[in-house]
Image (cartoon, rainbow, N blue to C red; front, side, top):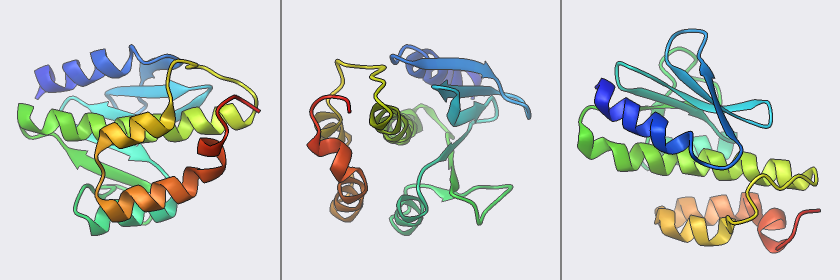
Length: 148
């Protein structure tokens, strides 16, 4: 799985505002404005954090599994078993990235002025129920076209 995980790390690390760091349990952590949005392990595991409601929807829709170590947390696990799983892993990481990006924008910092979260959400092609939940969660930030 190292090649697939290396591709994920390469792509995510190029997103504006994303820094990489060694994860304390091995692998690579993705950090935006000092907060981790997720991390990957060479064994093909992608872990990421969102809100409780979005996490629950991901689990209900079968798009992720409960976090393998702390299953009751807001973290989820996605397993990359083959190259075919990379796009779904990227989609989940992009969702976590948008969440962090909007949180930082609410503080008046725009790390990625080129990204329009509304457009990105459409590109993610989430299931209708999850898309509606994410949009409701992000609504205030999505309605603002410029940083606070």
